[in-house]
Length: 591
Image (cartoon, rainbow, N blue to C red; front, side, top):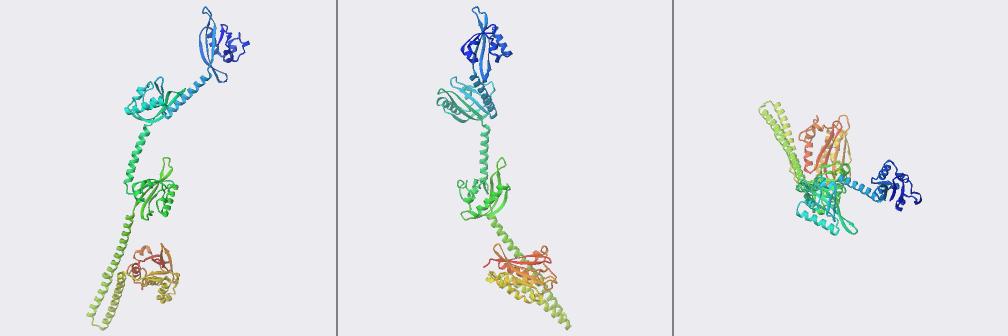
């Protein structure tokens, strides 16, 4: 404290006042207060000093050097007659308190800002005064106005029912009496009647070992709770839906581990869900199949391109084989990142079997129909034609009296009879082939059999100057019907000679390849060739000819086809006009 006379000069000062301002004791009395405190002596300060000297009380807080703060006051200095003779100047160091207040204000502002941004309300309960206070955000959560004054009683009224109220009372009692910190999900009905779910937290505050208050937070989590309920309902609906599907449904992570399966997938694998989840395909399937599945998964994961409707044969660890129709699509998160695979597999084993049976039935039916058509053609056309011709010639013969004409008619009658016999022979050959249910098969050397077929055609080969190159391995043996296979080779080689190109030496090559484990015999030539776009469907038909060759009768390939089918073989042809043809026999496995 310091005494200042009416002229503004220092009369007396306490040691504390002198030390606070850093003055020396022996040189300050009698000096002007404005000179002594010149670091504060701006116009406002001088005005305050002047008003103090005139008897007006003033007080305030001023920042000093080195970020210090002091609280000052000027009050009238009266003599014994209550006349103003100066002013009394008091100063207190409030640096720490002021800094604490500033820090508290900053924290309070920051807390309020954080509360507003995060929508987290704050509350405080003063135990000694039994008073509760809410932040503005807390009031917004309870949907009350800023003027609302919370109390313990009206706070409890927001909780839905008596059970909820008792829970809140118990929690607060545990915190205030034994210092328990808690975090609970509670339900309220706001001032506007809205049902809400809150996350409420509480922590006791101690002073000298005693709990003096409870502080905490509360957050409106109604939207999250409702969303969670909706998600759970949707998950239950989805699980019910996928469990009802007749197809296997699964979801894998990026390591191909199953993270979701439906009931059909459980039945397909033959294990309960808890023994499937977390396992990869190598733990559930045959290694070869698992490798294929993993390669498919990696392709979908790396490219993002789905696999749709792929047919696969799957072998389970039990040894059972199934035909599946499988689709795999990338499983993406909300950021569009691929986090796994969604798979759908349908067991089509029965469908595949039915398809095979249907194809076989169609093939057999088609073959039989074609045979019936050919036979009907023979009976209705060829035989009837020959019969009608013979009948007509006999009628002429009965009426003819001229010996020369009679001789001519007899010659013509002989030719017709010969043609009829040939047709009947062709018919008989086909009937014999089709009636032989059990064929005698022998192991033959294919190279030797090819040479034998060529021997039967030696005269034709020599006459046409054809060059036959037998490239069949000398060590290749087949179990087959020798007479049928030999006849087919003869037919193919004979056609290569018969349908050679004019002025071109026939080049005939016989060789073999392997396709799908079967031996395929090829007879290749450089002849006239065929337009397969026009003639492919008729090529192996009866009495079908495609070149103006007087020797062609259209029966050889027909019989060859019947012989091939009888021993379980198949005939194919590739051909280009004026380039040549390759006739092939897909016959069976090597012995």
